[in-house]
Amino acid sequence: MSEHAVPESDPVLAGFRKSIDNIDAALVHILAERFRITQAVGEYKAKVELPPADPNREQRQIERLRALAEEADLDPEFSEKFLRFIIDEVIRHHEQARAR
Image (cartoon, rainbow, N blue to C red):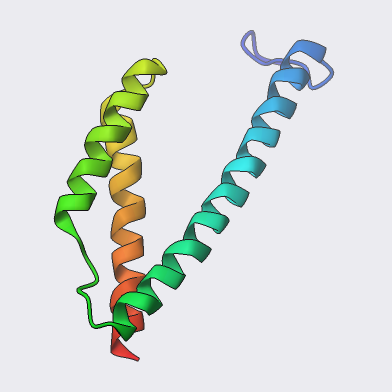
């Protein structure tokens, strides 16, 4: 074992990893619910012939999330990149709904 390796039986590390696993599972479920809702939004926008993207709302959301990140001691740059990734995926879904 190298000097930096941590034994698998380390209870402190195991506890941290269990918490991380639980948080990751919660994130997946939250994202799934968010995408279920945005999918419905995309279908509605297509039905009423609204554009897939709303740059003004996106900018407001980014500003809001950056402020929340700062309050939570999370890097606002990271939060913006994360939200931008989600927004881009949502827009792609909305464009697909519009093409149907």
